[in-house]
Image (cartoon, rainbow, N blue to C red; front, side, top):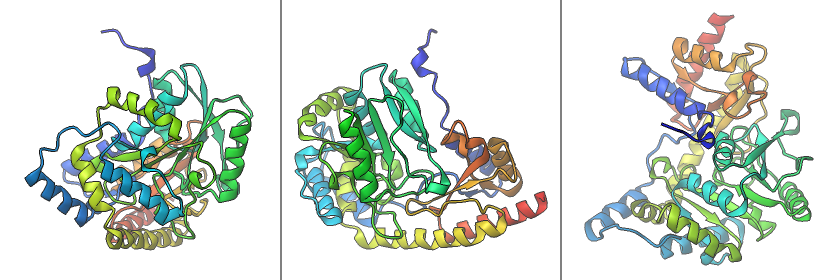
Length: 378
């Protein structure tokens, strides 16, 4: 069967690590999962209750392409609560996870052959989705010494996507950082996309939304992280008013709508502040545990994360092959971690990412196993 060159994208390595860990678990091994950015908690109880009630009374068929009006209104209210922004709900687009939002955004903003700036390290699917759309990702190297704050690339680009808090580094961009980047993009007619899916998961101060700087941006968020709803596949975008109909036409044809059941649950999740705060308290405790113990174990070249639930570590003193190192850790220690090649195709062979999104007892056990592994390895 023939195939397209657009489909020749790199694997999402963390998913391969998950599969290798699953096979070991299936064989009877105990595996501590520090590879995937997935909360260890279920969706908040108000979300589950809302869906249970809806399943008894509603068909849960198609919704309109932009999402349930009530959910869009509630998301707009979130921007008032979190950032003091008065947001017109008509600018909110509910999507099938943030992944669908990236597809819609890249398709709406760029023509085939154009280039888009992405951070290195950064979320790997940016690069692969861009490639699959015949777009060219242009890497922007960031550095731990500068806390991984990105700069606008000197190479010509049509767009720039940045995340704050960032995956895998946890770096948060200040209002001044965002203002500088957005201003530079405006001056060069570069579309600015702000990935804000880790907003709410922050430890020192709050994350700043790009919408606090400009309305002429795309903002992408999700219920996956702060609201602990990864498998529900529900995200959203906020787009400029004159792009709503453009996005609506694309969404109608590409996705019809986001899952109705997940949208109902999301409305309930927005009423779960007590639960989501309790989850954040767990991540905060896990973060402190990681920052204290990882240097003792031998992973001391890190930039402490402002948000999200990851530690990105330089392992060059231990290995120049992060992929092999992570395989060794999984096989010998029973701990799944992610090689940095997922996030940085050029320097990632000397880095790994640890996720601390799981239960504190599991994180503690994982650190114990890593300590034994590193002591044995020498």
